[in-house]
Each structure stands twice: as C-alpha cells, then as structure tokens.
Image 1 (cartoon, helix red, strand yellow):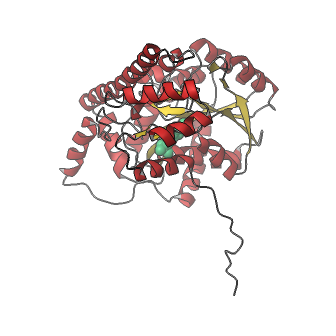
Image 2 (spheres, rainbow, N blue to C red):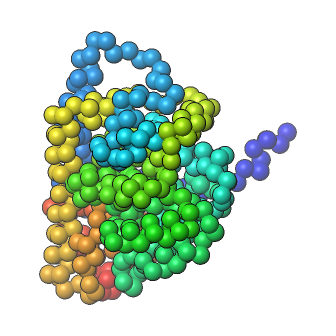
Image 3 (cartoon, rainbow, N blue to C red):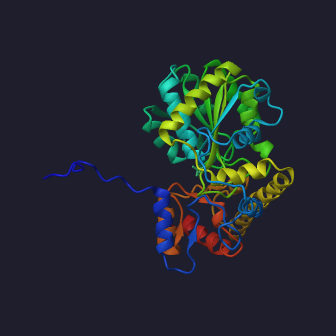
Length: 405
Ligand code: PLP
C-alpha cells in the first residue's frame, strides 16, 4: 500500500537553525557564532536578565498562583501594559479607547494572528509588501495565509544604507490600500532604520495611498537602549491618524526567547470598531491556540506593572544595548587598524542586534571553512556573537577574506 504521504516533498531546512546546528557540531576551539540573533554576554553565554530572575522569584513565592487557563486574548494587565509600552502613556488612541491588544505566541505569533485577521477582514488589497531584504518569516507567514507577497526596496548595497527614494517610489506605485510590513526599529537584517524625517515621508506617502501599516517591533529598547526612542515611528503613525497593527515580541528585550511572550496591539478609528475587531481576534485566537501560554507573560506583566522593576528592566536593557554598541566600535576600530580594504563606518552607524557587513556569499563560505565563523550567506552578523575574547580573531579573519576572496 502506498503511503498517503507519498507525495510530500522534502522542505529545505531553516537557514538560521541549521547554521546553529553546524556551529554546535563544530569542535574547533576558536569557532564563532554570529548567525543567530540572541543576546550573549561577553563570555558568550546566554543572559538571563536580573530583573527577570526577580520576577521569577516573585512568581515562585506566590502561594496563590494557579495553573488555570488564561483568558482567550490573554491577561488584560499584560496586554494593556504591552500596548502602553509601544504606544506611550499619553497615546491619544489609548485615551480614546481605540486600542485593542491580544496576547500572542511571541512576535511570530503576533504577526501570524494579525496576518490571519487581515486575510479574513481586510478587503482593500491582497498584496502585502515586505522590505528587501527582511526577516525570512515575514514572507513565510503572509504567504501561508494567502497574501501575494511583494517586496519594496530597502537596502542599497552601494550606499550601504537605506534606498529611501526607491522605497517611496514603490509605495507610490503599489495598489491603493496595500499592506506594508515595517520594522519599527532595528531593521533585521540590515541594522538600518529610516531617520525621523524619512519616517515622516513614508507616512505621507502611505497616507496618500491609504496603505495599511503593519509594524513589526521585535527590538524595542534593544536598538537604542531607550524604549521611547525605539517606539517613535509607531507613535508618529498613530499621531498621524493611521489605523495600524503592531506585532510585539518580548523575546529579545526580556531575554525570554523560549517563553513565547508577545502581543498584537491594534489601533482603529473608534472605540466601537475596536470592540468588533477585538471580538473577531478572540474568535480567531480560540480556533488557533485556544488561549496563550502563561509563564513568560506573567514575568513581563510583573515587570511592566511595578515601577521599581520597570526601572531595573531599563537598566538591563541599557547593559545589553551598550554591549552591542561597544562591539560595533571594537570591530570598526580593529578593521580600521588592520587597514582592511573598504569603508566600515556602516558597522557603527547601524543599529540593533545585527550588522549587514557587505561580506559576499563566497567570503562567508571561506569564513566558515577556514575560520569556523558562522553567519548567514547575506553577510549579516549578530553583534552579540562577538566579545572582547573573539573580536581580534574575527577581525583578522574578515581582513583575510576581504583581501583574498
Ligand atoms: N520580527 C523580527 C524582525 C525578528 O528579528 C524577530 C526575531 O528574530 C521576530 C519578529 C520575532 O521573533 P519571536 O517570534 O521569537 O518573538
């Protein structure tokens, strides 16, 4: 009898996860992993935020804590705090009750929930635009729920910066009411964000064309070390009167990668509309995951709703973002000292977890084979994979491949 799965083709392995598997299997003592976007300490160890440890202790000592189901849309104190975090305490949308929020399975789940909702209820367009390049899951998720996924220019390789005019032109030419996925801050993989002036230009074109902004915010507080600064673009769009979605992830800024704590913040035009949208979000969530996981969101809930812990969280965020900024400087200084051909100031100009180095796929290959350095083929490096211990080795290896490959 032939199996019913006879015709299932083999799917390609996920690039990032297979890179990590290759790194783990490598026995070379000098190996370097700059592939995965997870924070590491200077000892290259995972970092449990001290404030998360405190919240953990609070949870552990809470004799009343049970393990019942959460509400379908998550814990209200958590979702409200998450919405406040991204939109700001004084957000006009919050004061006018035009905000709904749904607890999701980290950032990916938030994008998925938002995309699925749009696939059902967004009638203006079936086209969704993602930046070129972008985080691979944007295409995966939107394609999965039936959108035609298009790209808008973002990275200009020659300028090693934002392809602003080309981006705006694509926005102008896109069919009215298209959905645009925008990285709220710390663009992955390029590390290049629009300036405030450029965001204003983007908002202007999007407003003229009635496009729908879907912000992906996976790095609030991680990009600049300042939660408000990293939320600026989203808040600006809200002030301009846009209806929008924001997918929030607490994976990076809380170091809660495996706990899958996320939130979808929804801004509409009226409180009445918000209610209806929220009811459909609940219905959708019920059929997809029934209700969200409790543990990670409890940690975030405790920290966001306690002024002292909140202040401490900001310090933890500063430590993480500062270490990354230090590594940017260190790499720039070493490449400059080695006289490595080319310009390298983009390394310190870029922001967030990643740097788009400009290394070619063949240089990346040699880095892996000769130096046991693991990064994605597009030359993106996670700055958190560098430390005072491996930076010299890494810089010398880059110098070698830039000169010789
Ligand atoms: N969006 C971007 C651009 C990301 O880089 C990430 C994480 O790598 C995410 C969203 C969400 O990740 P998670 O589902 O782990 O929260």
